[in-house]
Image 1: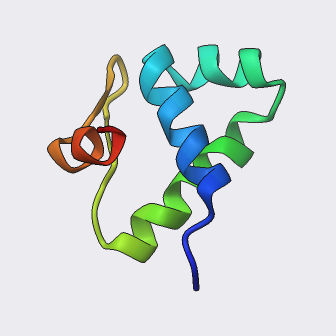
Image 2: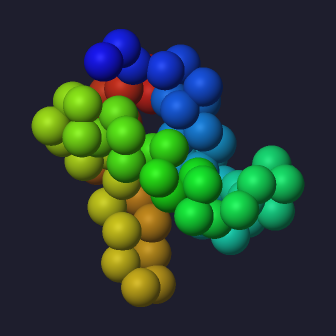
Length: 68
């Protein structure tokens, strides 16, 4: 399975917006779709890209390095 650049771009948008809700509103995509498409590279890479809590979303150290 190859990494899909579009999934990584979605990750970058969510990280930039700091919220799935804001990113999905800007993108016009369902939250479930964006969440699933970010989970795909996380699974492929074996690393979390985002630290998710009920109140906060932030890139992990690995996610920050992927954005650079």
